[in-house]
Every structure is written in structure tokens, then in C-alpha cells.
Length: 321
Length: 185
Picture 1 (cartoon, rainbow over the protein chains, first blue to last red):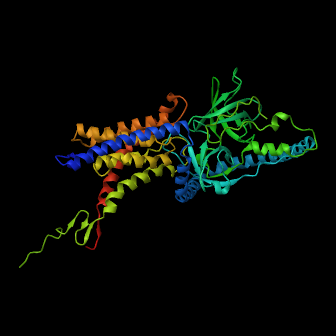
Picture 2 (cartoon, chains in turn orange, red):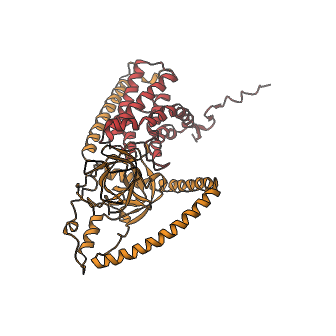
Picture 3 (spheres, helix red, strand yellow):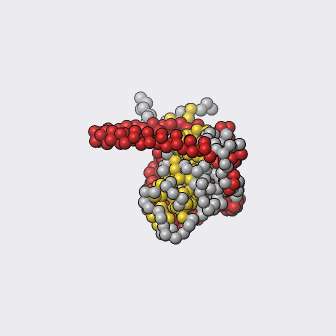
């Protein structure tokens, strides 16, 4: 393409100054960018206010497209369900039969659980969720993994609160605006969650790898006990997440742990629940008068909670609940 | 007898010339608005587990700069980068820095090679997108670089493939930019 003639300033002083000013401005723009970048690398929460108000402004648009997205997914699922419907039907019936038996067993176990807890004098209460929200978007073009939800400070959402879906933990609130909030997903490279194996007390850190998987790092190094297919749940250490929320299933083992897939895949999730920060609830729970013998004092102390907006660095508590 | 005038003499490709003229608002705001919307669009389509959506705002910036040099000033990277930083999830300031440097680089290249064709522009854009995404990944966080750089490979490839299409789209919008709108003089 022909070079633009407008850039030739010729003898015009005005044009020469114009070109010169452009270069100066662009150069100083790069400098300003570098300074801003430095500030935000040192203080990741430095421009949280600006970002939150931007996501507040665009929230209605995101809300509308998110609704469309859910409908679209539903349609695809409905259509694909018709394919191989017959064999699937038989399979599902078989599964349902087994599930009914399991359900009855689970009911019995729950009754027994309640009885044992009553004996110990533990108050059993799941924390009441703060808000229910829609996942309205994510930073799909950046190597950081953030998502936006449609609830903010006005609904009581504050930075640090865990966000979960019916199938497991999604992440935690990173910045909260007035009616939208930014969620640090589990798979972000700065996210670290203390987890344990659902069947025993193998404890590990689940660290995001930004590609949809988590790296599990065992705390007690040695022989790697993790096997493919193991399910990991939150251990409750660190005080942010309440124990027992499903996190990930191991897909591959490595020398010092494993690579795990997130159970509550944000791609397939449309609604999420924001829970209160666990250690506050735990402290309340333990402060409640209990008739029976009390739990060990170790659990009573709310552990030092990391500053919610800082990258997750929970104190490496040695044991799970 | 008077011959009929050429029926196209009162029209150009932007519409009729009678009582109609270019709107300054449309002419100046179109590229800026498009790039800002492009910065926001990757947020919408789905909650991604993997960074694969091309940086639309940046691709639009490159396209506008290459297809219509002069429509964006040299310092356009500052305000547009700021908007991109609000939505991209990168640390704040990363786009301001990288976009300003990209515009300066294109300016320098234009000084050196004034006559360019489609292929040269495509190669320029491909190199710039690769560098920008790579540096973006470097700025974005902790963890090993060997982990993060392969992560952006699909995104880089998609961006390269998408660039000519975005160029065509920008050319369409460039005609819209100069559309003649009814005015009363």
C-alpha cells in the first residue's frame, strides 16, 4: 500500500511539531505503561476499584449473553441426548437401581452421623450461602484465569469468599464491585488450595496451571500414594474454604504428586454460590456452648488468614480436619 | 436537446452527495469504539478454562493501523491499552506498555519500508502478536516460563489465522466510517 502522504511534514513547523509530539506522547505512554505494570506487579490489588467499576458497567451485557449461552448449551445437550437414547436408557435404569440402594444406605449413615455428632456435642450446620450468582464471563484471552460473577458488595460478596457450584469448588472472590465480582478460578497460576484425598488424610496443595488442570503437590514427600482417579476435597486448612468441598480428580500422577482435572469445570457451570469465609464460621461454631466434650483446641484458633486479595499463600497447616 | 447527466455523478461509494456529507463523529469514533469493544468481547462467549481466544482488541488495533494509517494517532496505545487492561485480566499497565511499543514499532517499520503489501503486513502482525502474547504471558504471573509459553501457542496460531479476516472486517467498517449522512447546510 502507498505510504500516507500526511506523515510528510515538509517545511510546515506545525506539522513537524505534530509528528514530534506524537513520538514523545507514544514514548511516554510506553513509560507510563511500564510504571503501571510495575505497580500492579508489586500490588496486584492496586487498580481493583477501576476494574470493578468497569465490570459493573458491563454487567448487564454480560448477564444477557450468559443467559443465551446457558440456553445454547441446553439445546446442544438435548439434541445429543437423542443419539444412542435406547442403550443409554437401559444403562441409566440400571444405575438408578443401584443409586436407590446407595441412597438408603446414605440416609442410614446420615442418621448415625447425626447421633454420633450429638453425642460429641458438635453443632452441625452448613454455612448459609451469601449469594447465588451467574458466571457471566471470563478472561479468555489472558493467561490469567479470572471469571466474573453477577453478584457484588450489594449482595454481601467480599474478597476472599469461596465460590462453588453444585459439583465442587470454582474459586474465590478476588475483587468485588457493586453488583459484579471477579473470581480467581482454581486453575489460575496464582491460586493455591489446601486439599486432602477424600478417602484418607493424604494432604496436598492444588496449584493452578492456567490450562484447565491443577498440579497436586504433596506436603509429605516420599512415596507417592496418589493414584489416577483419586478425588481430592478441600482440607479446610488456611481458613478460607470449609473442609469437604470437592475440588479435583487425578488424571495423571507425577513424581511428587499428580495432575488433576477440576471437578466443577467453569465451562459447564452457569450458576454458582458464594459462601462465607470459613474461619469466621468455624470460630462461631466452636464458640457455641456445647454440652459434650469439646474438640481439640487446635481447631478453635482461626488460623492466620491470608489477605484475601493477595495471591493465595495459606499457612501450610500440617494436618487436615 | 440536453443529454441526461451521468446518473452516478452525484454519488460516490459512500452514498449520495446531495445534502449528505461525512459525519465527523462517525469518522473519528469508529476505530476507537471498535477496538474498545474488541477488548471486551473475549470476556463474553464462554467461561474458558484455557486461554485460546485471540486478543481481539489488539488485532483490531493492528488492522486499523495498517489499513488506515493516520486514523489512529501514535499515542492511541495509551487510552486503548488502559481500556484493554480493565477487562483482559492481565496485570494493569501491560497493554498500555505493549500496545504503545507496537505502534512505535509499526511507525518505525513504515519509515524503513514505505511500500508494503498484504504479505508484509501479515508477517508484521504475526510477529507483533506473538511478541505481545509472549510478553503478556511473562508479565501475567509466577510459575515456570516453560509452563506458560506453550500455553499461548494455540492462541498465537488462531490470532495469526484470524488477522486477514479481521482486516477485511476493518475495511468494511472503514467504508461505514465515511458513510454520507444527511446534513442541512
